[in-house]
Amino acid sequence: MSNVHTVISMKLAEGNEQAYLSWLHDDAPVLARVFARVGIHSKVVMMNGSRLLAHYEADTPTAVAEAFQSPEAVAMLTGRLGALLDPEVPPIFYTEELRWTQSVPRPLKRAAIAMSLKPGQEAAYLDWVRNTAKNQFGDLWARYDIALKEVLVNGTNVVSYYVIKDPTKILPSFGEPEAIAALQGELGAMLDIDDSKPPTFYSEVFAWHD
Image (tube, rainbow, N blue to C red; front, side, top):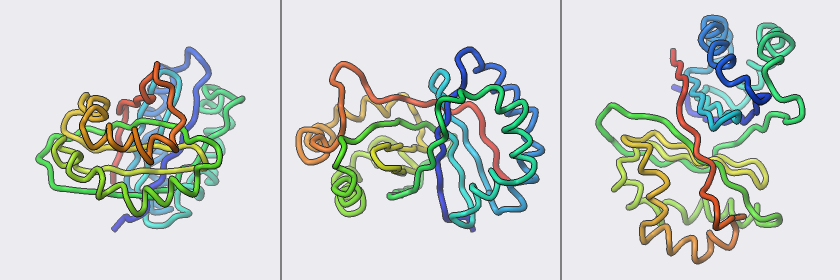
Protein backbone atom coordinates (compact mmCIF):
# COMPACT_ATOMS: atom_id res chain seq x y z
CA MET A 1 0.00 0.00 0.00
CA SER A 2 1.39 3.43 -0.93
CA ASN A 3 2.11 5.60 2.10
CA VAL A 4 4.53 8.31 0.97
CA HIS A 5 3.24 11.47 -0.66
CA THR A 6 5.52 13.93 -2.47
CA VAL A 7 4.93 17.12 -4.46
CA ILE A 8 7.24 18.62 -7.08
CA SER A 9 6.85 22.16 -8.39
CA MET A 10 8.13 23.20 -11.83
CA LYS A 11 7.58 26.04 -14.27
CA LEU A 12 7.00 26.01 -17.99
CA ALA A 13 8.45 28.57 -20.34
CA GLU A 14 5.67 31.02 -21.13
CA GLY A 15 3.36 29.86 -23.92
CA ASN A 16 4.10 26.14 -23.52
CA GLU A 17 1.04 25.25 -21.46
CA GLN A 18 -0.93 23.44 -24.18
CA ALA A 19 2.15 21.69 -25.51
CA TYR A 20 2.84 20.41 -21.98
CA LEU A 21 -0.67 18.99 -21.66
CA SER A 22 -0.17 17.19 -24.97
CA TRP A 23 3.14 15.78 -23.73
CA LEU A 24 1.51 14.52 -20.53
CA HIS A 25 -1.06 12.48 -22.40
CA ASP A 26 1.35 11.29 -25.12
CA ASP A 27 3.97 10.03 -22.66
CA ALA A 28 1.63 8.61 -20.00
CA PRO A 29 2.31 4.97 -21.10
CA VAL A 30 6.08 5.49 -20.75
CA LEU A 31 5.65 7.11 -17.34
CA ALA A 32 3.41 4.23 -16.23
CA ARG A 33 6.20 1.72 -16.94
CA VAL A 34 8.71 3.79 -14.99
CA PHE A 35 6.31 4.22 -12.08
CA ALA A 36 5.62 0.48 -11.93
CA ARG A 37 9.34 -0.22 -11.56
CA VAL A 38 9.96 2.25 -8.72
CA GLY A 39 6.68 1.86 -6.81
CA ILE A 40 4.75 5.02 -7.69
CA HIS A 41 0.99 4.40 -7.69
CA SER A 42 -0.50 7.75 -8.68
CA LYS A 43 0.41 11.10 -10.17
CA VAL A 44 -1.80 14.20 -10.23
CA VAL A 45 -0.73 17.32 -12.12
CA MET A 46 -2.22 20.71 -11.22
CA MET A 47 -1.56 23.98 -13.01
CA ASN A 48 -1.79 27.72 -12.49
CA GLY A 49 -0.83 29.30 -15.78
CA SER A 50 2.73 28.18 -16.50
CA ARG A 51 3.34 26.88 -12.98
CA LEU A 52 2.98 23.16 -12.22
CA LEU A 53 2.53 21.00 -9.14
CA ALA A 54 2.82 17.23 -9.46
CA HIS A 55 1.57 15.11 -6.54
CA TYR A 56 2.81 11.51 -6.23
CA GLU A 57 1.79 8.55 -4.06
CA ALA A 58 4.55 5.98 -3.67
CA ASP A 59 5.81 3.07 -1.59
CA THR A 60 9.08 4.70 -0.48
CA PRO A 61 10.50 8.20 0.06
CA THR A 62 13.05 7.63 -2.73
CA ALA A 63 10.63 6.46 -5.43
CA VAL A 64 10.07 9.84 -7.10
CA ALA A 65 13.78 10.64 -7.20
CA GLU A 66 14.42 7.19 -8.68
CA ALA A 67 11.80 7.86 -11.36
CA PHE A 68 13.48 11.15 -12.29
CA GLN A 69 16.82 9.34 -12.61
CA SER A 70 15.48 6.60 -14.88
CA PRO A 71 16.75 6.50 -18.49
CA GLU A 72 13.24 7.29 -19.76
CA ALA A 73 12.93 10.40 -17.55
CA VAL A 74 16.41 11.60 -18.45
CA ALA A 75 15.49 11.28 -22.15
CA MET A 76 12.31 13.30 -21.53
CA LEU A 77 14.14 16.03 -19.60
CA THR A 78 16.80 16.34 -22.29
CA GLY A 79 14.23 16.16 -25.07
CA ARG A 80 10.62 17.19 -25.57
CA LEU A 81 9.75 17.87 -21.91
CA GLY A 82 12.97 19.74 -21.19
CA ALA A 83 12.30 22.04 -24.12
CA LEU A 84 8.99 23.07 -22.54
CA LEU A 85 10.33 23.91 -19.06
CA ASP A 86 11.69 27.23 -17.89
CA PRO A 87 15.46 26.60 -17.45
CA GLU A 88 15.71 29.44 -14.92
CA VAL A 89 13.33 27.78 -12.41
CA PRO A 90 14.61 24.50 -10.92
CA PRO A 91 12.17 21.91 -9.58
CA ILE A 92 11.37 21.93 -5.86
CA PHE A 93 10.63 18.69 -3.97
CA TYR A 94 8.14 19.00 -1.09
CA THR A 95 7.92 16.57 1.84
CA GLU A 96 4.60 15.67 3.45
CA GLU A 97 4.25 16.95 7.01
CA LEU A 98 0.49 16.52 7.59
CA ARG A 99 -2.21 14.19 6.29
CA TRP A 100 -5.88 14.39 7.36
CA THR A 101 -8.65 12.24 5.88
CA GLN A 102 -12.34 11.53 6.12
CA SER A 103 -14.87 9.60 4.05
CA VAL A 104 -16.57 11.78 1.40
CA PRO A 105 -18.82 10.41 -1.39
CA ARG A 106 -17.44 10.56 -4.91
CA PRO A 107 -16.92 12.24 -7.32
CA LEU A 108 -13.94 14.08 -5.90
CA LYS A 109 -11.49 16.52 -7.44
CA ARG A 110 -7.93 17.52 -6.64
CA ALA A 111 -6.48 20.99 -6.19
CA ALA A 112 -3.75 22.79 -4.28
CA ILE A 113 -2.67 26.17 -3.03
CA ALA A 114 0.90 27.41 -2.65
CA MET A 115 2.10 29.80 0.05
CA SER A 116 5.37 31.08 1.49
CA LEU A 117 6.67 31.43 5.02
CA LYS A 118 8.53 34.39 6.40
CA PRO A 119 12.27 33.62 6.57
CA GLY A 120 13.18 32.14 9.93
CA GLN A 121 9.72 30.68 10.58
CA GLU A 122 10.42 27.21 9.16
CA ALA A 123 10.84 25.35 12.46
CA ALA A 124 7.91 27.10 14.13
CA TYR A 125 5.66 26.32 11.17
CA LEU A 126 6.60 22.64 11.14
CA ASP A 127 5.80 22.47 14.86
CA TRP A 128 2.41 24.10 14.22
CA VAL A 129 1.61 21.76 11.32
CA ARG A 130 2.53 18.63 13.25
CA ASN A 131 0.98 19.51 16.60
CA THR A 132 -1.75 22.13 16.16
CA ALA A 133 -3.19 22.25 12.63
CA LYS A 134 -5.55 19.26 12.86
CA ASN A 135 -7.08 20.43 16.12
CA GLN A 136 -7.46 23.99 14.83
CA PHE A 137 -8.81 23.17 11.35
CA GLY A 138 -10.29 19.66 11.56
CA ASP A 139 -13.89 20.79 12.00
CA LEU A 140 -13.57 23.25 9.10
CA TRP A 141 -12.12 20.58 6.77
CA ALA A 142 -14.95 18.23 7.71
CA ARG A 143 -17.61 20.86 6.96
CA TYR A 144 -16.15 21.58 3.53
CA ASP A 145 -16.32 17.94 2.34
CA ILE A 146 -12.54 17.56 2.16
CA ALA A 147 -11.62 13.90 1.76
CA LEU A 148 -7.86 14.42 1.99
CA LYS A 149 -5.89 17.43 3.19
CA GLU A 150 -2.11 17.43 3.10
CA VAL A 151 0.55 19.98 3.90
CA LEU A 152 3.90 19.53 2.13
CA VAL A 153 6.92 21.72 2.84
CA ASN A 154 10.34 22.65 1.47
CA GLY A 155 12.01 25.38 3.52
CA THR A 156 9.82 28.47 3.26
CA ASN A 157 7.73 26.95 0.44
CA VAL A 158 4.40 25.36 1.43
CA VAL A 159 1.83 23.42 -0.61
CA SER A 160 -1.63 22.53 0.72
CA TYR A 161 -3.08 19.65 -1.32
CA TYR A 162 -6.79 18.81 -1.33
CA VAL A 163 -8.99 15.97 -2.50
CA ILE A 164 -12.37 17.63 -2.19
CA LYS A 165 -15.95 17.57 -3.39
CA ASP A 166 -15.88 21.16 -4.68
CA PRO A 167 -12.50 22.88 -5.21
CA THR A 168 -14.16 26.29 -5.59
CA LYS A 169 -14.79 26.21 -1.82
CA ILE A 170 -11.10 26.07 -0.88
CA LEU A 171 -10.35 29.79 -0.98
CA PRO A 172 -13.69 30.80 0.62
CA SER A 173 -12.87 28.44 3.51
CA PHE A 174 -10.22 30.94 4.61
CA GLY A 175 -13.10 33.22 5.60
CA GLU A 176 -14.40 30.75 8.19
CA PRO A 177 -14.02 31.61 11.91
CA GLU A 178 -11.30 28.99 12.52
CA ALA A 179 -9.23 30.26 9.62
CA ILE A 180 -9.65 33.92 10.54
CA ALA A 181 -8.58 33.20 14.12
CA ALA A 182 -5.52 31.27 12.94
CA LEU A 183 -4.50 33.92 10.42
CA GLN A 184 -4.88 36.65 13.03
CA GLY A 185 -2.78 34.63 15.46
CA GLU A 186 0.10 32.15 15.40
CA LEU A 187 -0.31 30.95 11.79
CA GLY A 188 -0.62 34.43 10.31
CA ALA A 189 2.56 35.52 12.06
CA MET A 190 4.48 32.79 10.21
CA LEU A 191 3.06 33.20 6.70
CA ASP A 192 4.41 35.70 4.18
CA ILE A 193 1.03 37.12 3.22
CA ASP A 194 0.22 39.84 0.71
CA ASP A 195 -3.21 41.12 1.70
CA SER A 196 -3.87 42.24 -1.88
CA LYS A 197 -3.45 38.75 -3.36
CA PRO A 198 -4.96 35.36 -2.42
CA PRO A 199 -2.77 32.24 -2.26
CA THR A 200 -1.81 30.74 -5.63
CA PHE A 201 -4.52 28.24 -6.60
CA TYR A 202 -3.75 25.16 -8.73
CA SER A 203 -6.40 23.12 -10.58
CA GLU A 204 -6.17 19.47 -11.63
CA VAL A 205 -5.36 18.92 -15.31
CA PHE A 206 -4.13 15.31 -15.36
CA ALA A 207 -4.41 12.21 -13.18
CA TRP A 208 -2.86 8.74 -13.48
CA HIS A 209 -3.13 5.77 -11.14
CA ASP A 210 -2.19 2.11 -11.41
